Image (cartoon, rainbow, N blue to C red; front, top):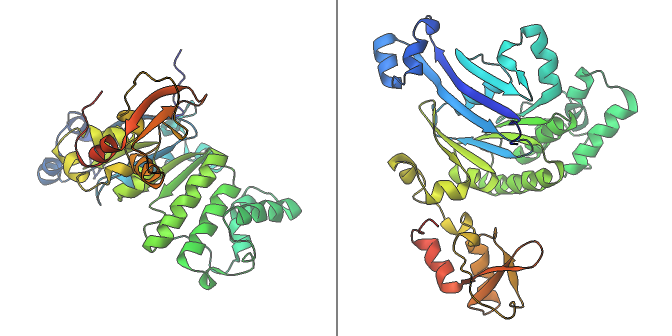
Length: 345
């Protein structure tokens, strides 16, 4: 029996304007954004969003400015209420919660990391980190010990008594992440958290998040306009345009099977070698012995090519977690697949 999704959005639509309820049927019947704005003077924020999000994974929503991604993330914690639709989180329809019920629900279930850091300038790194815990009523030694644990986790040990204006942008965002993690919420909402950072710092922060997620296994909703960032971080990616989800799937699914010309153009410049896994191109052949060097099927083509070239080999075997043979790939196939379309198997 299939388990219920941890987060489920069902036909969620948001219309901005004075008479949104009067015209919601038009939106549900797929009127386009431009027509609604020109003819009815209302704006579509979200249109018929339906998606299931599993627990303990990174779900990325990406799109260009105005696509609806930030509107969507604010629907999850009900900072924005939908015009129509259901949002079920761990069995609770949050659209039916009143304001008094929402406050404890948010505090228990959500933490948020912002693009502009949102640190309190008069507080130190330590007191910024434990701010959410204070609101929950935690005091004394537990308060500081918990904050220090997360400060160390994000690599800021020794900076706990600094103020935000004494830190670089990357360090300030580490404080924001430590603050979110200190609250121990199961869901972390991250709204373009790295977009204000320099490219090298951004890559460093992405790696830190990946490593933290391997250990913590939170449910992370990550917003970005950067496809490379989405492909690097997302267990699942949803691409939005004009308030609609155009395509959802793994990075590999989207790159190999774009749904329309918009997605094709959006993904045209992607380095396929960093996205496509070798399991997509491996072939099973009769073998008596397994090669000395082996790989697993989820290894990316770029990493496979680098491994093969550095070891001066032209063929390598693929094994499962039990080290049993499941296929082989050649260097020629790897390099070709990094450049050319792959026939879907």
